[in-house]
Image (cartoon, rainbow, N blue to C red; front, side, top):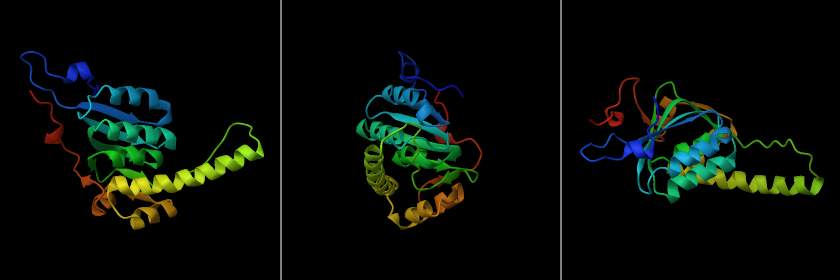
Length: 190
């Protein structure tokens, strides 16, 4: 399905609205950050979109940037997990007002992993380690806040590096379980 851009989304004289903008969040967030940011900035503040997720995650900073854009611009997003939504991709997923999953959707919750390909000194490494520990704590609290749930279950999933199914997400009240059949809420309006 080809995503519709802002100019194709708004009504022209005599034409009816064709529905919300559709965005594919596929692959590593970091590799697609520029395009994803551009697509979200193309939605008017207070506008709607559908975001299709199939991502193993990426940078926590990229995840925070996407969450910030969704929240600060008051974008009413519907998340649809078509495959995987793991690691850093969980934050923008949780920031969506409506979250749809199939029985085959998969989510990986885990503690943050730090890797550096740069040669850095011991003082910089120590500061990065301190910052990273703070960031991890803050992002775990934010994830629970975005989901609107207490941290007990989500913290357990993170601590145990748990793969969670779409059925489990729905049972926990974190998403709506939908079958693999056409969804009327996504149909293009004529």
